[in-house]
Image 1 (cartoon, rainbow, N blue to C red):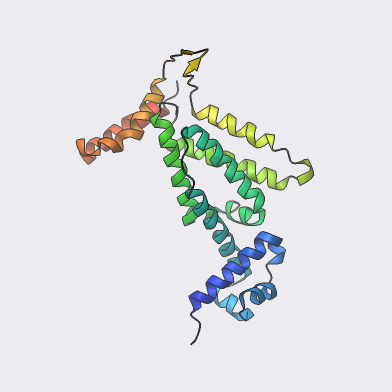
Image 2: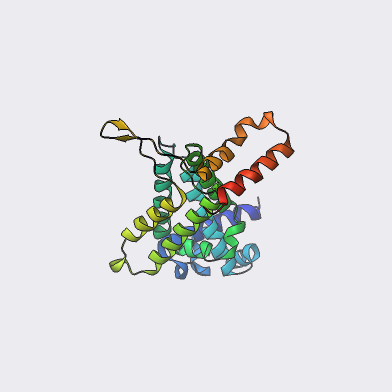
Length: 239
């Protein structure tokens, strides 16, 4: 029975992804991939056009696997700590898979990749939880953009830095700087006493915007749209 093109293509991608992870771009040669996938070299070009097409497909495979694994994590008690763990996981993934990371995040194609969009949606959902606690000072979308850009920039910088001189404190410092820029600090206890702090109007607007889905049935589509526009305007207004 003849092998289906899809089966051959999947084996080629898996083989290329393994080679890319272990040896970088130079390890993904026609000969190495065809041997690892058990196909003839022409099959690679029939499926992917050229080696660049195969490299991009392999990088997408590696990224999709990471996003699926990340999605299995159970949320913690504090969404801000989940946000920190998510940042650290992103950086760790990039350093563990530098070839795949630079192929994906160094290209505009990242904005069209299904796995990348799934990861961004998960980040926005997490930030919505932060907003619901009244600790997000900017809109969920703006916060997600800042977190994504910050983590991506740090990861690319660390990848480009020789391992011997790589300073992981840079990632931690940047992470905390971004979190400080998008959130307000709330202390719940101080020496056994509760501490109250006025929540900025913008943070209240962000929290209400994040909670609109809970009262969806109480408003018409037009009312939700209008209220959402007002709340976004308040959230993004300069103090």
